[in-house]
Length: 258
Image 1 (cartoon, rainbow, N blue to C red):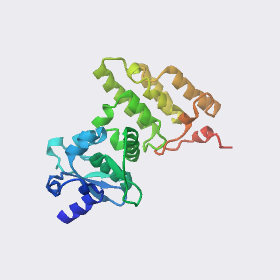
Image 2 (cartoon, rainbow, N blue to C red):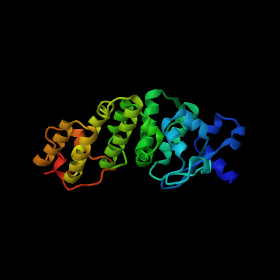
Image 3 (tube, one colour):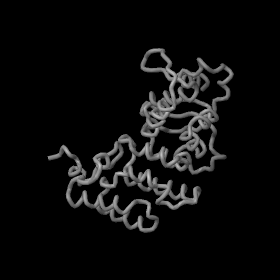
Image 4 (tube, rainbow, N blue to C red):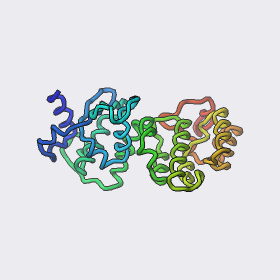
């Protein structure tokens, strides 16, 4: 076990910067990608440096029904949809403020923009798990809107709408502002035309209770169904994400389809 842990730990190169005494302090393990590569780390470092990790680690391994206090501190946390190289790059950055690029031994100091890009890549790889974390519900509207612009989120749009609704209600309670007001920016990035007519009808009914989504946005989605094209809707809102489940009407939204 000790040798396995050392191999997993040195895999992201951080021991160059951290003393040998840190071996015994390792208290969390991630199983990453289809290769099931094990990566060992320190909870305190990840939680302090990254909000997404803070939410994940506070809730324990995905699928566990135990309370956080009863969960073994080392996990494991299964991240099957995350590319190991992306995950390791994020870990390396969180520990060192630098990252090794390609196969060369070269470290480049990253600024805030680059850290955001790495965090976004991490979110894109395990979107469904991330949406269930405390960190997701604590995001600002500006950051959430930026994430929602991504084409590579690995989740269906219907699930994304529901997650944004939950986020909005939490933010509304915390900020003591109406749901429609706190969610005004993120909901602009929801791709409603991707929803099937039955899903859109259900969404419209739910929306009457909390006014999460502007009526004009729902009307525009209905119009795209009626005209069988994305007319009057920004083109990116008609573009399926990586995790979007196929629906029959999607072929009408593709501007290249004949």
